[in-house]
Length: 69
Image 1 (cartoon, rainbow, N blue to C red):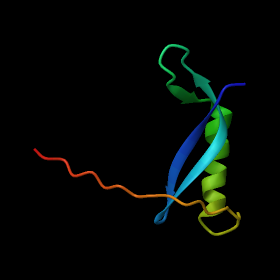
Image 2: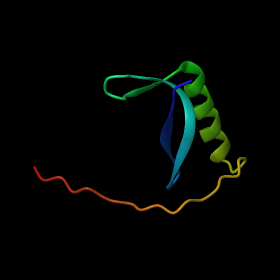
Image 3: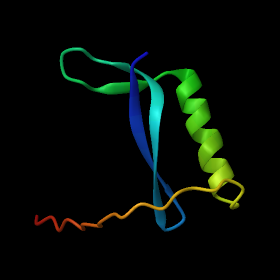
């Protein structure tokens, strides 16, 4: 079953959810979430917000891009 990773923001933290059920284009690799995958992502993010779900912190970097006009 094809899967992808999804990143979402929860307050001031970024959460990465791995192995989400998706349709993946064989030409370009673009991933489209299946309805059941999208529902599970929504449920996980809702559980993280009030602190009901324990997540493992990972080291990460933050980069802010400055775009010029």
